[in-house]
Length: 125
Image 1 (spheres, one colour):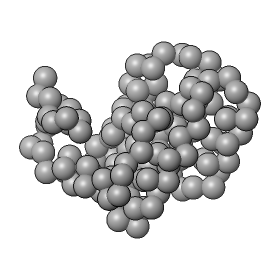
Image 2 (cartoon, helix red, strand yellow):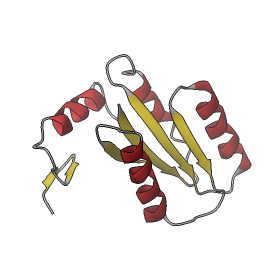
Image 3 (cartoon, one colour):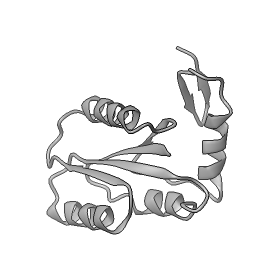
């Protein structure tokens, strides 16, 4: 199981959700979904997403509590639940084609204890 961390402000991440969900048979993942916005329509859609998909932890804060605070909380949850690793995703991106499972494979191939991997390469610090 890998953790997918997403913090939403004002953009419902439909394309991101779809680009990951189409590979749910290949990649086992859990969503850590935080809502920092105040649009009731977006919150309702996020709640529906959480209720209609397995392995979604939804935190509807409704205000900006700080991006790093939610990232850190999600990383702690991911470790607590024994996820293999966590990926922090922006709400306005989507993987093209089979980019999602390829990125997961790329991260899995990194040496144990590696710090951070991005689509631009690896960061050891």
